Structure formats: C-alpha cells, structure tokens
Length: 332
Ligand SMILES: CC(C)(COP(=O)(O)OP(=O)(O)OC[C@H]1O[C@@H](n2cnc3c(N)ncnc32)[C@H](O)[C@@H]1OP(=O)(O)O)[C@@H](O)C(=O)NCCC(=O)NCCS
Image (cartoon, rainbow, N blue to C red; front, side, top):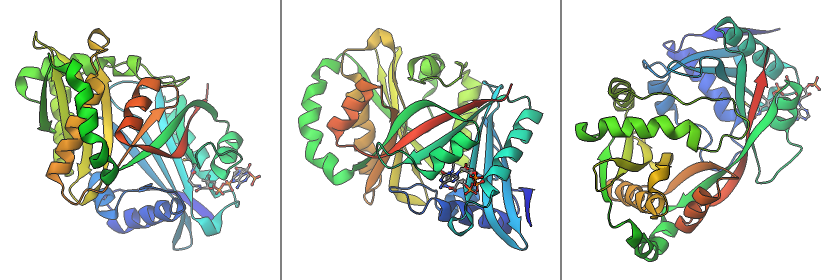
C-alpha cells in the first residue's frame, strides 16, 4: 500500500529520500538533469520570496518510491502552478505517478491555482516516450516545445575570438557585469526590462502574464540567491542615455563550480539589431570562465521557435541534448 504524504523540507532525512527518488528517476537523462544533494539541501528549505513549494513523497512501508513537487509563483500568475512527478524506475506503471499527479492537482486547486504546468524531457525530437504518455494520460497538452542545449567550454574557447569581432555594432553600449546584486543606479531600469520578459520570451500556448519588478522585489530575489550560494553572473548593456538595454546571466552554485546554467536573456525591442544578445552572452561566458577555472559545461533552454536566440546559442557552440515539452492543463 503506497501512501502519498506531504514532506517538511526541514526534515533532512525525508528531503534526502525525496531527492534520491528524483535522482534515480532522472539518471538516464543526459547533461545535469537533477541538482546535487548539497544544492537541494540548502535551496529547498530556504525562504523564497518568489515561490512557494510543496513536496510530496509516495511512501511504501519505510521506503520512498515516488516524489512530487508543486511550485507556485507568489508575485504574479496566481492562477497557475507547476507540478512534477517522479517515480523510482523499479516501481513504474503501478499508478504511483498518477496518485502523485492527482494529489498535486488537489493541493493546487486548494490554493486557487487552476492552470497547471509541467515539463517532459525527451531525447532530441523523440516521440512515444513514458513522460509524454504519462502527461497525456494526466490530461496535459503540449503548450510549447523547447530545446535543452549544452555548451562545452572548450568549444566556447575555440569560437570566442571570432565571435567577438561581430559585436562591433554594439560599441555604443557600455557592458557592465556584476555577481547577483545589481548596482543601485541601474535598478529601476533593470526592473522595467524584467517586466517585459513574459511578453518578449516565446511562451507558445503557456498561460502566463507579465509582472512588475520593483526595486524591493529585485533586492529580495537577489538576497535569496545570495543566501543559497547561487551566483548570478550578470552582464548588462547600458545605452548612451543610461537605460538598461539588455541583460543576460549565467548561474553557478557554490557547491558545483563544474556546471553552470544560463538564466534569463532579454534585449529591449527598442535596442535590437546591434548584436547586444551576442555581446551580453560573450560577457557572461567570459566572466564565468574567469571566475571558475574548473567550469566545464553550461546549459540553457530555448523555445524552438526562438530563432534569434537559437542562432546566438549555436554560434557560441551550444548543442541540443534534449527536447523539452512545456505542458499545460486547465482544471476549470
Ligand atoms: C512519467 C512517470 C512519472 C510515470 O510514473 P508511473 O508511476 O510509472 O506512472 P503511472 O503508473 O501512474 O502511469 C499513469 C499512466 O501514464 C501512462 N504511462 C506511464 N508510463 C507509461 C509508459 N512507459 N508507456 C505508456 N504509457 C505510460 C499510462 O497511461 C499510465 O496508466 P496505465 O498504467 O493505467 O496505462 C515516470 O516514468 C518517471 O518518473 N519518469 C521520469 C520523470 C518524468 O518524466 N516525470 C513526468 C514529468 S514531471
């Protein structure tokens, strides 16, 4: 008899068992599909002003055999939540994933969240896989297709100098960089750009709305990153009039300086056409390489329809390792 239980993220034994299930359930995927234990141990119980989380365990006797996660944005998109389920490979097709998905839906709707979103990872261009079949059986539809890409920094080193020549058209902009905490003088303009993100990033059919980023909100989100040991190495393009014209970042956790991840990248529509996207990415990648000599790979994900960003990433040397299906289910 399998019981579905909510877990307290401060209970480290329970959290470890939860983490082990996700680790086992994602072990067959390429790249870095699951965080290191140290990262999860610190990040999941830490206060997060941006997101609420609920952890579920599927427990058989004294063993955890399935894991669930519900995340809810707290500042916008209060109608939506993200739901994830993982079943230990030796316990699949017993209905554990279904029980987790159902319980996640109950918790979401108790909080007024009626649009559920999720993710399924497949081999590039793959079809007919377990996550897809499971998603369909749970009533989710594909709202957007993304590709997960990985860059080996040795490949980046081979291409970097030739690419830097192409950023000559960005010469009227000043590129500044910082670790996580935005300089005071750019905070207001940075918030304006962050507010555009949801409207500018291709979201397919995902039902998500734009949000406002006040200086206090940015500072709160930065503090959370500092508290959990995540370095958001950021590059900003400053226009001649002082406005933040574009931003991009690479994130590296203190406990895993071998892998990094690209966070957001956005160039204000008013400042496009100057190769700022490429200039910003070169700046973040150079900074990451200079800061972490042991850094080996970076990963990123982009909508397949985002031709501009995909072209920049391919030029940098990123290669597709997986297809990501962004899934959605409306419960009312
Ligand atoms: C996807 C996953 C959670 C399914 O877990 P599970 O416990 O095996 O799922 P269930 O037994 O509850 O299956 C529910 C339904 O999904 C469908 N399904 C699940 N796995 C399937 C597979 N391999 N082939 C075809 N259909 C499948 C079936 O319709 C199944 O119902 P049925 O067994 O009555 O036919 C599991 O394979 C997993 O952990 N994968 C890796 C993580 C992941 O992709 N999670 C999903 C996105 S968050």
